[in-house]
Structures are given as C-alpha cells and as structure tokens.
Image 1 (cartoon, rainbow over the protein chains, first blue to last red):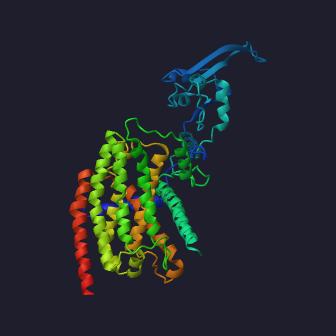
Image 2 (image 1 turned 120 degrees about the vertical axis):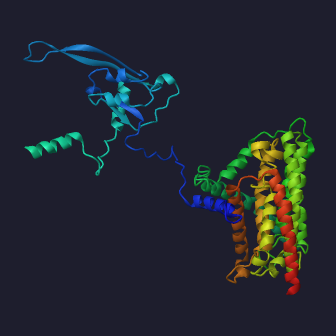
Image 3 (image 1 turned 60 degrees about the vertical axis):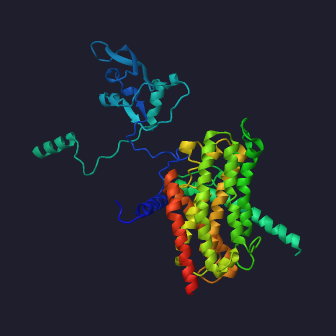
Length: 170
Length: 321
C-alpha cells in the first residue's frame, strides 16, 4: 500500500494541519443569521386577494394539510343584466405539523396566491399552534424574496421566444 | 534577600506556573482540536472566543456533588487524585526556565529525580482503579499498570542516552552541554522519549487505560466533581511536564539561534514547550487509539530495542570524540 513506513502517519498529521488552516464549517446560527438561497422552502405565504377558492391546492396536497372554507357573494355590477357571483374566502389554514414542504400547492396555484418564504423560525411549544390561519399566512408575504434573476446563459422563456419569433415574422 | 523570602518566591512562581500553564494548554487543546476537526470549539465563555471555558469548567466541577461509591476504599479513593497531581508539581520545581539559575530548585541529580517522581503516576492510577470497586476502573487500572511499567523502560533509556551524552544528571547541566548537532545525534532518543512520555501521561493515541468507548472512563469512571477535575488537570500538567522535559533534554532548553540566551532564554524555553505541547495535541487529533497488543508491541519490539541501539550509538560517539 504505502511506499515507505510512516507515510500514513505523516499523511494523518498533514490532513489535520490542513484542516486547521481552513475555515471551520460551523455556522453560529442564533448569533449569525443563516445565508439562505431565495428559493428556500421555509414557510408558505398566502396573498389572500389572489385566491379564488378554486381548491386546487387543497386537492393536490398529498397529506391534506390545507383547510379552505368559503361562501358565495352576490356582486352588483352596474350596467350588467344580473348580479354576478363571487367566491369569498372565509378560512385558509395550513397545518405545518402535517405539511411536508413538497411545494405542490404553490406549483398548482393558477393565480399566484401562494409563495415560498425562507423564514423558518416559527417553532411552537404546542403542536396545535402550528396551524397557521390566513392572517398568519398573509404576514409571511412580506418575507417573500424577489424571484432570482434568470440565468444569463440559460434558455429564455417560451413566451419570450414566441414574442421574438412573431416580431421577426411581422 | 534572605533565604526564606527567595524560597517562598521560587515556590510561588512554580505554583503560579502550575496553575496557569496547564489551563493555557487545555484551552489551546480545545481550540486547536476544534479547528483541526473543522469546528470552532468553545465560543461563549468569557465573551471572546471562549477564552474562559476552562475557568467555567472549573467552577462547574466545584459545584458538583462529590460522590464516593459505597463499596469504595474511601481514604485511598479520595487520595488518588492528589497523588496523580502532586508529582507533576514537584517535577516543575527542577525544570530550568533559563540560564544562570533561573530554576526553582537546581538539583545535581535532577534527571534521576524527575524520572523517579514521574513514575509515581502509576501508583495514583492503581490507587484510583482498585479503590473504585468498579470493574471498568479495575480493567483500566490494570491496562495502565501494564502500559506505564512497559513504557517506563524506553522512557528512562532515552533519558539515559542524553545524560550520557552530556555527562551529567543535572537538567541545567544537560542544557549547558547541549549542542545543535545533538538534534541529529539524539534524534531517535528524542522520538522514543516523546512517545514514551505520551504513553506515561496516557494521552491519545496511548489512552488505552481510559478508552471511553470500551471502559467508560477507565480508572476515572467513579470520580466526580473536584476529584475528577484533579485527574483532568493532571493530564494537562502532564502535557506540560513531558513537553518541558523534551525541551530541556533534547531541544536545547533556553538556547536560541540568535545568541541572546542570557536575556531571552526563558522565552525560548516557553516557545519550545508550547511547540511540543502543540505536537502532543496534534497527535491526539490525528491518530486513533492503539489496541492493547499494538501498544505493547510498539513498546517492547520497537521502542526498547531502538533505545538500546541509541545508547550504543551515544557511547560510540562519546568515546570517539
């Protein structure tokens, strides 16, 4: 294995000495905030105005941790022949004691009402307090970071390509 | 200055060194070991990088309950930590810090005295092991006895080699006689002395008697509170003593490369002791524990023959010169 006796011993000393000169991997978490990437899955934020109570998120949720309740409201639109109906959100709860942070609800939401936020410090002493209602979920919206910029060398979005093609054609 | 004032000053200086330097070594061990493992080590005690961690540990140990097992041999059990600690304090008395009598107590037979006193350590281990009335402690104690008696031999032979080379048993005398080329001439003896010294203070990779993964904590299993802290302190003082002895015997003590030995001698000694202590800590991080048979094989089949060969070499060169 080794060419001369004691090579392994010297190697052991070299490795430890090298490690000592490098920066340690320890993060001093409570004192120093962790540097989280913008796509971190910390908590789910709800933009209530965007929600149309389509129930897609609640239906797609693998462990059914989203509870939605709503009622219909008549809206009188001036000039319209009859009153329109509108869904009003009464309850939107996410039980973070069940949530497994898969992000499917955020993926399926057609109206961009749900967002990931990197906030993660919402531990509770009582498991029941992990049920966040729509007010609490709305508070997380402030912490949602702006989406990361597109990769300069990446493929551009389908819409952009299509627009450019139509410009060339027109 | 009357004799008794000087005496008190010297003893106080040794006690001060005995109380501060081991803590310094312990703190260095915490930090060096942590960084060698990619960690930070203590960061909170004392606000700045955990400098007061060992003081905090000391306060904690004092507060803990001092438990003596019911089946234990009480006086022996209680005496063992003191017996572990005291020899090292006595050894520090005769270790020279600098030239022209910068030593607490110059002894003509300093080396002989040091070797015999360090050997008392095995008694404390056996006392602790037997008096604990615990099978783990007993196993650890027997392992320690086998290890310490075995390694005593290369330890003494290596020290004898340098004593023969210097033609004196006095520690300041050995430093006086030391020449830089001895680093090559006495290199095997230095290595043997250093390794055997590590085994004498039961430091990893020679910590078979403690072996926490198999013997709980060896002969220290039953100890708590201040008495346990005494054993830990003895380990750190042991590092200091072995580092200081290696420095004095093999690294030229107060002799530095720039010729300001009279003024800066004490600093050279301290720097060398710190460097050797660092190597002792480094060994602990780098190497796994030796198995019991590997431990004995290294001693009897490698270190002892090598020490005897070094003795022959020393005599040959000494006669030739």
